[in-house]
Image (cartoon, rainbow, N blue to C red; front, side, top):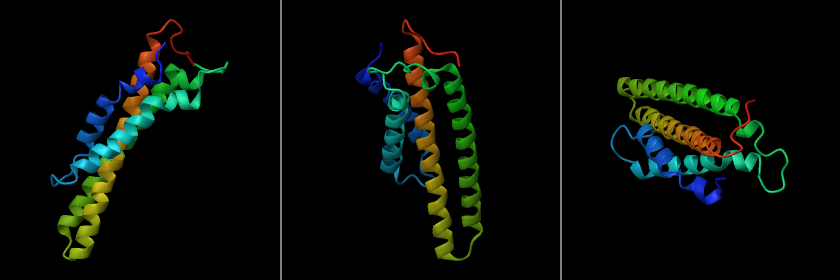
Length: 145
């Protein structure tokens, strides 16, 4: 059965995906995109076990270790990332159309924040999926819920 360290081994993929999604429009702040993605990935790869700890817990491998939970997380992740990405594009368009330099900068920063959050959300979603897929390969598998 995968343990904490084995699930931590899944962390690079969510970090890479999150960083790509959170990529700064102007090429700057890449370090922040990596940090946000790393935090999101760390949360995602361990979230099911934090919600349903395995040690002495008869409810381990219930809802938060189920195929249904993976579907809910996947749908929520895709929807959230799409909405955040659309909002970022709207803010960037408004920024380009703005004459006021302060408002322009505020919209640019808000757009980048949307991208960072989208990267973090994507990293959480992929982290949860990798955790559950790893658990699905074990003898106990995942709950069908």
